[in-house]
Image 1 (cartoon, protein in one colour):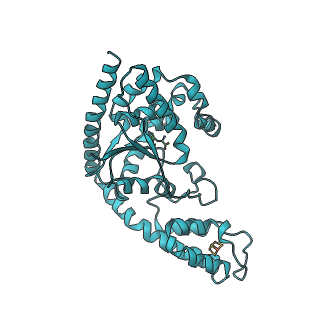
Image 2: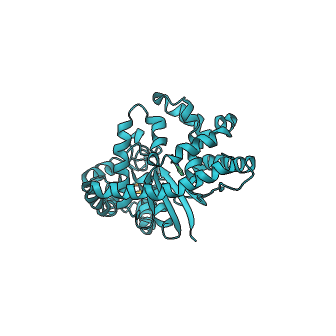
Image 3: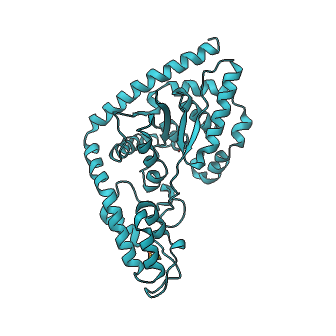
Length: 326
Ligand code: TRP
Ligand code: SF4
């Protein structure tokens, strides 16, 4: 029996290179060794985007098309939308009974998000429970492991604590403590050197067109001390170099050499990278264009995913209720 993995993404915007490096590339690779469940976490998205819910629907469709075009295979993995499996909210409620408020107030992501997303008014009852819903997502499928970035580790730790509390309260090992699978790839910064994020508009989308890729890369800041081509550059402080080390690892030492030896200028260096990135993105973008046209095909995949997910999720709910004597 293959071990089970569950992971999710919040459909709050277009997917970009940061999602590929930090999550999606990992998902694609895990498919061969694990039974995978990949979920569009729309309830989680709505916890912050509740003022404009219809955008979430559009992003579900768009994001799932990216997943497929970058290699998530519906023949091997279960792809579904959280809100179509009502068991998520049911287990969320059950787990809420036994989750102390202190655990949630103490969660670092809660404080950070409240401070960062001031305009979203997320100082709400639901948002405080964000990690409880995430615990329900994971435990419904008895996931052994969850691939996450390090920012999500506190949520995983909370999920483990909630599981222990459920099992010890009802004296039955119904839920499983999930392990974290940390994404091994380095973090990719945004074009301006800050965290890559849609709110900073400093990203390259997974379906970015060629012209716009060229434009965005040509505007990237390089080593600020390198003004003329004759100046020797410092790749270690240059964001373009860090992009090379993620997307064209085998070329990185050559870049290091032409930069530190002032053999190529930044314009040429960026041009070469632009071509490499276009070569990477273009075939996926073309695949996605086809998927976007096949709405019925995508909805069929989600429908099938939903029914497979519900089959398992509903069993867990029955077991949980039995353990509680309901
Ligand atoms: N909180 C995750 C994020 O922001 C998304 C998510 C929701 C998730 N449910 C999950 C991730 C379950 C892993 C497992 O990235
Ligand atoms: Fe960065 Fe390339 Fe310029 Fe060096 S040559 S500073 S790596 S853009």
